[in-house]
Length: 565
Ligand code: MFK
Image (cartoon, rainbow, N blue to C red; front, side):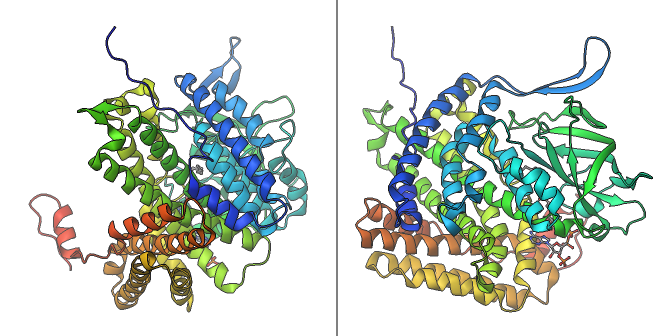
């Protein structure tokens, strides 16, 4: 028998990651709940290992749509994978949504919830998708003030009782677009008895097995664009489990997230309940966007951690050219770069969650509310791109095994690729960042937060990274101010601008946290200081001047000379 390589093993992700443990101690560990929380998270780490194994075993199972029964009845039944059926119960019991609505940690409830999501999410085959939308639906309904809908739906969305738990979908994307939602074609008509019914096609409805969904439709005769849309809640099935005037046309054949039953739907008079006004549906659904974008960022961080953890473990088991990979300087250098990116992404995503929680608990001041509005697109877009890059390197660190499906490793990269796409693409969110910063005083608020975090870092080794974070944030705002009167150039540079802001904020929060860990004698302190330095050395300011005239020339049809500057 020849050589056989030991596969990478997942270690307890709570014990394996000093960043998470230290952060939780800093933000939630001070009070009487600290020890219980630590025990809870360590136990969840064990559950994550168990379900990682199950997800490998369940790898080939995908959702199946059966449109007709043997007797010719249209049933549109979707059978999800066995792991997804387990995940439904597991997610409720461990409070993956509920924890955000519970009083134990006060305004830190979101941080508690997102620590749970970070640990469990990567083992649950993207079941975090329906959970994100469920959480978003609960927040959106609560924000709507529609007491009847709140009473009927919210308890199901935020319960820990699996028998009572529902998930919610979010149906926005149509054939006209997933970004330009104002072009929605679905029409809402009211029956003589006042019942609203929806008619149209929803082109990309993730997690179609949910019991309820929030969606947008244009009340007949309504104005064009997003102003004329209204938000509706749709209960998908009747008491017998039959879809209510909803046809599942087909499941999507996607690059990744293959366990998520994403479908194209026809709404053929689906009964719906108006949530708020007859207009301004996009504005009404924005609490959903803020929540799912935060989940997206945490999920990006979770996938990065999973990839790094497996790559690091593999490096302790794989020998090449006479020594273990973990002892080779170039391999160490490669993994170190991933750890630094992970640390920056972690700090950004958890700052998003922290601010969301403070706003929900009514303790966020005006500056924090403005910061949260900016951080939502910036955090989502920055971490989404990082996840793809980091996970790609992590599977490459496993060599050919990283490219072979039955190791389970390629799925990480396929799944990571959804993160920059859904819930607002990188470009759409870059433009949203500019919009969020266009209100007077907001740029100064963002720079002040970067400065505040950087100022907290006084250890010698953190001075330079902290300085770099502030310099990049100031440079970004200066560029935006100077380019404001040139809308085409502003738009063309929006991604480099938003990325600079994302990296500057990540680095400042990382310096602040590394300092706290050093001050407390936390085991992770020196490692986080190294992460801050490495993150800074990888580059923060992305504002390399790029000529729009060159860009136009590069994408002009062959043989044509581009016009414009
Ligand atoms: C692992 C976890 C992952 C989560 C799983 C989820 C799976 C879901 C699958 C999907 O991907 S569903 C489709 C996702 N699609 C999007 O996220 C939409 C992307 N497009 C945008 O975000 C556009 O910017 C937007 C649709 C919001 C632009 O629409 P409009 O028609 O140009 O709206 P407009 O006029 O800019 O904004 C309308 C109002 O909303 C304005 O307020 P006012 O009426 O008071 O002026 C805006 O200020 C406000 N608004 C817009 N974006 C906002 C916002 N408010 C807060 N936050 C925002 N992000």
